[in-house]
Structures are given as C-alpha cells and as structure tokens.
Length: 619
Image (tube, rainbow, N blue to C red; front, side, top):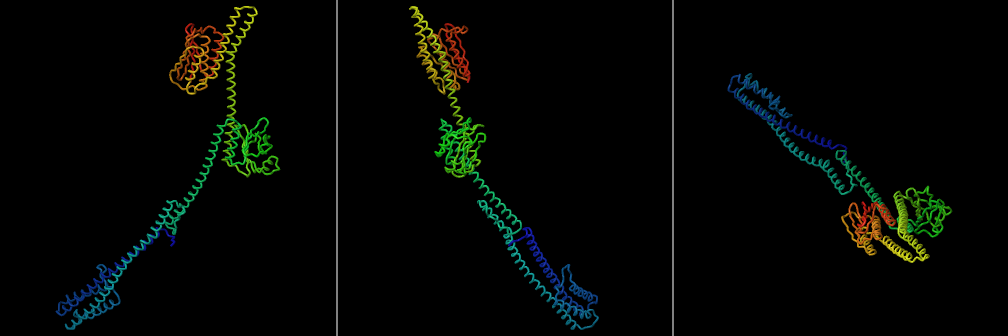
C-alpha cells in the first residue's frame, strides 16, 4: 500500500493511538474501581442503618432518655443524608440506577413514617414498633441488595475490561511488530538485497519506493545512486574500450615505426632503402600500391626511386614527372600530407590512375627540416580517409626516411673525405720521403753522366755508391710506407699494435727494441690510436735513418695523460743547431700528426748520448 506520510508521522499517529487507548483503558479502570470502592463504602454505611434501626428500637423500648434517642435519630438522618449525597473524599457514594433510587426512596419514606414514633411524638406499642423496625430493615436490605448487584455487575465489567485490555495489549504488540516490519524491516531488507546485488556488480537493480517517508527517500536515493553508477560504469567501459583501442592502435603504430626505423638503420644503399621502405609502408598502410619518388630541387621534377605493386604502365609513363602536372608530385612550396580523390578518366592529372582502377591517393611529402626531398604515394582502389593518428605515423615514417637518406649522404661524404684525407696523407708521405730520394737520385744520375763523359772513373764509382745508397733508402721508405698504411690498432688497447710495429722495425733495421707499459688509463679512441702509432713509426724511421743506434726503447705511461717515449742510444744531434733537411721533414711530419689529435711532441738529444722523443696526450 502506497503511503504519502513520513515515517515519523506514521509512528507518531500509531503511538498516539496506542497512548489514547492506554489512557482510556486506565481511566475507565480507575472509574470502575472508584465506583466499586464507593459502592462498597455505601454498602457498609447502609449496613450501619440496620444496626442503628435496632438500636433505636431498643432505646425506645427501654424508654431511654430522649436526648440519647435524638442523637441516634440524628445519626440515622446523617447516614441517609450521606448515602443520598455521598462523600467523594472517602470515597463513598451509591452506584445509582433506577432500582437503587426506588429502593432508597422507599427507605426514606419508611424512615420518615417511623421517625415520629421513635422521637416520642407518637405513642406506639413495642410490638408494632418492632414490626415497623423490621420493615425498615427490609428496605435497608433491599437497598443493600441492589447496591451489591450493581457492584457485582461493575466487578464483572471490570474483569471483562481487563481481559479486553490484555487482548488489546497482545494485539497492539502484534500490530507494532507488523508495522515495524512493514515500515522499517521490509524497506531495510529491500535496501540490503539491493546493496548485495550492487556489490556483485549488478547496477541495474532498483528498490521499490512505495512511500514518501524516510525509507522512500532512501530508496529513491539508492535508485538514483545505482542509475548514476550504471551510467558511470557503462561510460567507464566505453572509455576503457576506447582507450584500449587507442593503445592498441598506438602500439601498432609504434611497432610499425620501430620496424621501419630498424630497417632504415640497416639499409646500406639508397635503392635498398627506398625499395624496402615502399614494401613496409604498403603493408602498414594496407595500400594497393606504393611509389617512392625523389625530388630534383633544380628542375622541380620527381624521379621514381622505388615502388611496390605499382602497375608497369605507371612505372613506365611516370618514371620522371614534373611537379604539379599529375596527382603525384606536389609542388615543393605547397607540399603537404593529403588525400587526393580520383574521379574521372578524362582528368589529365588523374586519368591514368582512374583507368587502372584506383579511387584515391594519399600523398606524403618527404621532408628534412624545411626541404622537400621527395614524396611517397599510397594508391587505394577504394576511397579512404586519413585520421590524425595515421597522419602522424606517416609523417614520422617519412621523416625517418629523410633522416636515413641524409645519413647515407653524410656517410658517403665522410667516406669521400676519408679517402681524400688518406690520399693527401699518401701524397705528403711520398713527397716527404720517396720524392726527395728520387730527386737525390736524379742529381746523382746527372753527376754520373758528367763523370762518364769526362772519363773520371773514381768519380763514377763514388756516384754509383751514392745511387746505390739512394735506391736502398727509397726501398726502405717504401717498406715503411707500406707498414704505415697496413697497420691497424686494437680498439681496446694500443699495446698489440705497438708490439707489431716494434717487431717490424727490428726485422727491417736489425736494431733491438724494448716495450715498457706502465700505469692504467682509459683506452684511446681508435682514430687517436692510429695517429699516435704513425707518430711513433715516424720517430722509429728517424732512428733508422739518422741515429746509428743498436737499441731502441718505447716507454708508454697510461693514465689521465698518455705519454709515449721513444728513446735510442744513437749518436744524437744538437737540438739548437739547424737540423738536416731530412731530419726537419721527419720532425715536421710528427708535429703535424700530433696537432691533429691535440698532442704535444718534445724532442731531447745530446751528441754521443742519444735522442728521446716524447708524445704527450691528454684523454
């Protein structure tokens, strides 16, 4: 049953009804009890009338003094008056009804008839007086009987009412329990069941709101909460599903980006780079065909560098296209990532693609900073759209392609520079060693020709010896150059390369060598090791050419500063004096190589003691 009253109102009304019923019951019980008490006192008082009647009769018959008789008559009058009016303080009152009133009237009338006889105003004999007294006592007994019957009815009514009160108490308890169950426990049970379902994840549960009381409001709040939770849960599920799709899409993009980036790092040539990129991009983009075009900034043309699944007709006709004349090949100043729909075969820019069944084209410019290096074209037979994520992925892929191409170009430039530097070094070495030896031999050949023309045999022999020495010197220089160019250092340690260099030097010159390594330090970079090794080789070459030594020491001190010391026991020279031309060239070569790696070369020598060359290098 739907109720519009609040729970507090319901309990107030129900409690008020119970309180009213209890008060009525208590009041009625008190009234009946008072009636019984008053009636009992009236019976006692009426019973005294019997005693007073017989006493008056005795006094009259004994001819007692009139004063005493008057006193007894006054007591009888007072008792009648008390029965008629009652005394609410005792309490004493007659439970009046028609019977008791008739009996009391008869008693009063009989008393009024007998009173003159008892006060002596009328003379009667004792027998008649006793008879009248007996008649008066009968009227008293009749009144007492009526009062007692009334009291009996009241007692029966009181017992019945007490039984009814007990039944009402039981009924009130039952009703109280039912009302409590109906208004409190049942709504609480519904809420508990609803909460249990919510705990299990059922947010569609609703609690019936049958009233507008506090539990009705609580049920309405519960229903609003579950509705909100259901909306939030479904919204959260949608968000989680959307986020999962986004993450999966992002993971796919990252995997594709990683795959392509890894391939671009490993590719060695531009052709392999472009062809592999075309294949991977077609698989990632799910395109029907892919073309990779390279741009010529001067002539504003695009050269087809690689393709995958591209029809041969397009490959043949669009191997080199001018920018802006076809759907492919955007002008560099307006190049951007865009989707190009292909509509008609009659369109000059789209006709070939339309005849071959393509419906749309995605053009991706290959940018390096602000330069457009080329373009990647994705061909689709169906119309396509380009999302923001796909646009970012394609831009990243083409950016990696541009960086890979630039790295290939930079690597090619570095190789070219390395080759040029190596050639320059070779030319310098040839100029500083073999070229000078050849110039010396040319002079000696001229002198030999002059000596032969003059017939100077002794001079001829001397010149031949000089030529022989020059040829040997040139041969040794060539061997040293071969040693220089074939020597490679160990990436981790230079010690093995130094041992190899000393072994070759000892084998060529016959000079004993010794290597000493001291300390510990960070390994030198391979390019620095190579230059240090060349400086050491140049110092050994000077020992072989000029020192006339029979023992050479190479001492290496490792640490924050590396120090390489080449010490011989040769003839030495005066450092302050102007050195010979060949010696000057060797020292110049060592200084030049040392400056290239930020090292310093210091030379100390004394005549007859030997020479020490120290190379100091900070890591």
